[in-house]
Image (tube, rainbow, N blue to C red; front, side, top):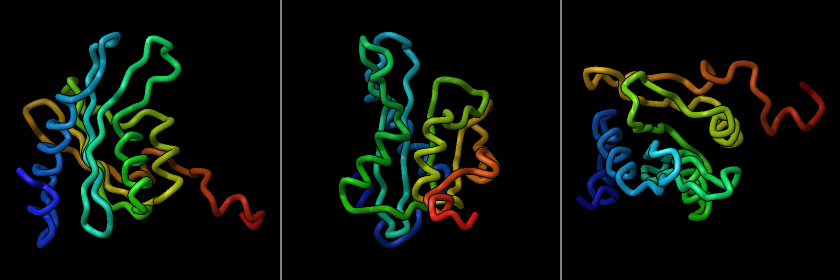
Length: 144
């Protein structure tokens, strides 16, 4: 499926976003943790960027799937995001790690995040709920 063309005329559903995140998850390079993560990031312009985690033998150099998707979007000139779907092997509805939350916060505060829970139920969160009282670019001007 050419998902970029598929969603030019309409916004993808949460289920379609999760399906794309699952597609990205299958590409993850996770030989150490075996914990594959995929992400599908929807920009406000309607483009979707996929990312997967990429591990490294020097563990600190590992990059999460969510940040890979963000960095791909940024490298293509996209800086406004609308939604992020995250696919993991867990069925607990795991959200993004703290580092990913902060990177996402750099570019938006009102992002919708989708995760899958047991029974294929899709949960929806707002980034502001996952990272309350966050620190962002506007905090650097000294007025807050």
